[in-house]
Length: 136
Image (tube, rainbow, N blue to C red; front, side, top):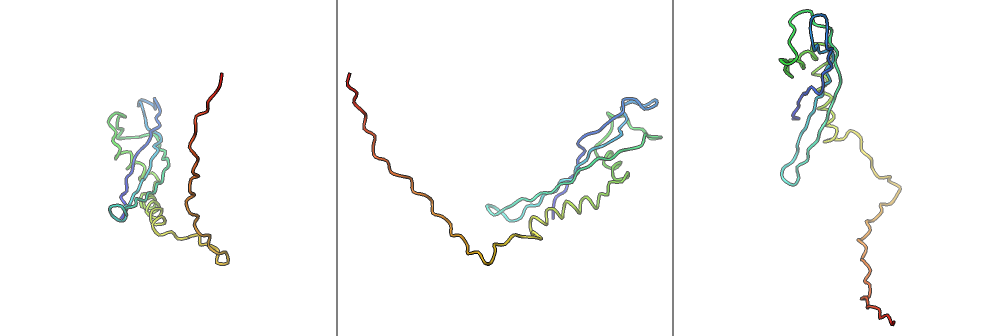
């Protein structure tokens, strides 16, 4: 099962809105997911991400000063204002599952014989270098 995390990456603010200052009008968010399969040397980590922005109407009540905001509070605003948390998380999960079990793969053409691997080239052996004697 993937591990998901939501983060707020940036807040856009109006310096003044009526009698309020530093009013958040847009939040840029991201949902990241990772899943590790296997263990030890066989472990592989897969990841997915979705990101977007959510804009907000000016507050009419319950204003929280900018320096008192929490990331969770802003995420809740996003989810209350049109960001579909379940759909975004399903998308990130599907990105990861598509990496683990690709729904489409490229197979070699059946009428083309496979190309055998080429052996590592043997470096040429050069004769020893003899210093040249220069006459004056």
